[in-house]
Length: 193
Image (cartoon, rainbow, N blue to C red; front, side, top):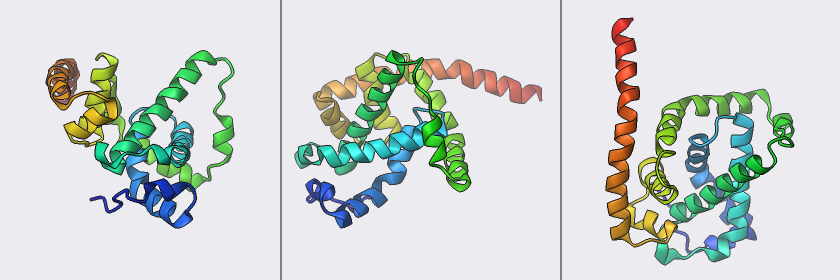
């Protein structure tokens, strides 16, 4: 249950106490969001930090009438993750993840690896979502994975709630059809052992 109502969200960039409250309340949600989309613990840690830096920079753009702070933060996180994936595509030869590894101690590394393991099923679902058109996939992620109500997810994506509901229904059917063969194979393997 969220307690940060966002009235002072614009202050996270210059008031350390407000930022700390915002960060503590939303850290796990952002870590889950990122862990479902990447499988490297160092990259997940870096992107989580980048999300909060982008939130500080973009706090003035938060509009309370478009949804809760967590919905806005998921939009920020989505942009940060997508930007990183685009950067990796353009600069695949130059990308090295070594720098982030030096910043993690063994305990932090273990916690991130545990979180990535815990989100393995979510990444399978994310792979099924990759079959959807980009807008439908983003809608499914915000609603099914990140727990936003359809109206807030629609606001994040800039579509009408009715349009979002129709897309969500169609997308769910398509994702379920992609997951069923995987579930059937898993059940077959379990039955054989």
